[in-house]
Amino acid sequence: MERDFVKEFLTYIQVEKGLARHTLDSYKRDLERLHAWAVANKKEITELTRSDLRKWIASLSREGLAPTSISRAVSATRGFFKFLMLDGHIKSHPAEDLDTPQRFSYLPKFLTEDEINRLLAAPDVATEEGIRDRTILEIMYATGLRVSELVGLKQADVDLLAGLVVCHGKGNKERRVPLGKSAIHWLQQYAAVKAGYGKQTSPYVFLYRGRPFTRQLAWSMIKRHAEKAGIRDCSPHTLRHSFATHLLQHGADSRSVQALLGHSDISTTQIYTHITDMHLRSAYDRHHPRARMKTGSRDVQD
Image (cartoon, rainbow, N blue to C red; front, top):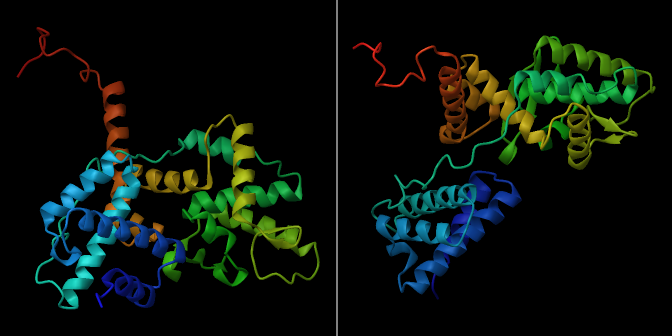
């Protein structure tokens, strides 16, 4: 009976890496695509070469697969062939330096600092709901938490004295993220609101009618306040993108931002570096007195 190397790899990463179910399902689909391509080309999956894998990636592009999906498929393929090599099934790693075409063709949307200020000011903090919403927005921008990390945040994860939150990211990986003074202030305001409800039974920080806040509620709340602030197409992830981009724009190094975001691969973080490079280029072109001067101009000197 032929061995199912894909199934063995998925079992391995589930046990060893602790990846989330949706990530495992995505990797399974990606590797099933690779196996189907190998069969169609009359090749064994363990015999594929770097050239074969590049042809497979090109076929994914022709099928209209999004660049982000292709990037994930390449990541799954790298992990799969590394597993095969470590287990002694292949002698070389054909996907080791494999890259994706149009690596930065997807550039995440982020808000300007002025838009962030308008968004933060949108909730009516004269109301208890407004204080909660302002606190959520402050925390998301201050920490770059994913929406799933935000709604899963528990009281025990927040240390206001130390100015830290402990969040549990993808694969149950734990990371500690600093809180700024503004976020701490609004967490204190929200704590006072919750104290007025009497004894709380829920361990979660953010509640809606006594129940834990949900991802859907976070999405609708952010969209509502963004529209009030005159901002289009704003989601919880837009705040995460803004957090990372603004840190880099103000001089943070990419390794620090990688740690704060909880990215396992620095290449995921480097997309923000690309954004800030574009931002700097745009700023230079707009504001440098000689940036737009024609090279044929007589007053340009060597």
